[in-house]
Length: 138
Image (cartoon, rainbow, N blue to C red; front, side, top):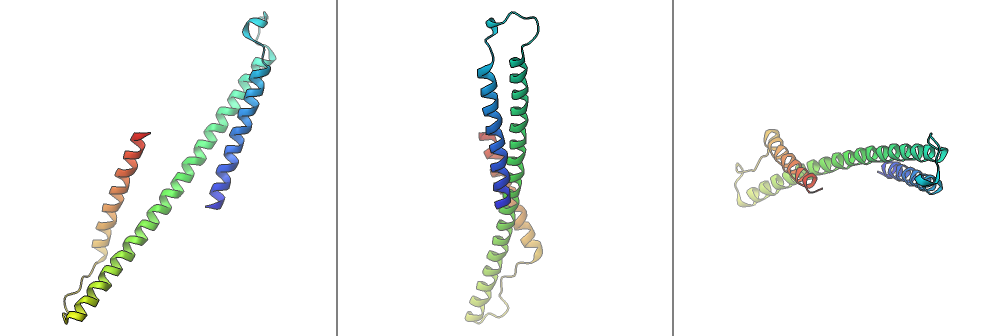
């Protein structure tokens, strides 16, 4: 996660640096009515170039954000799955302890791999629904 944050910070710093260069180029460019030449003056070329660099840095930053979001989503999914398994194990252990205390040796709650997979799919579907809802709000 630290490396991901460092990459995001570096990418954001590049966006800020290119934005600064764009502002400098734009502020040093003469106004449209100040020149009467037939070709574009150097300052207009500099502004166009700075704008291209800025757009490219913004695109790279967005890609870095997308990669970071994928990592966060993968970590969230992994933690959710681990939590689900831990919860299922705890429920099974609690049920066997209650059954043993009540003298019911054969009445245990057993969650098999199939049931865990069903629960996992249901949770994944809920997460996707939540993510889809969040993306519609933006």
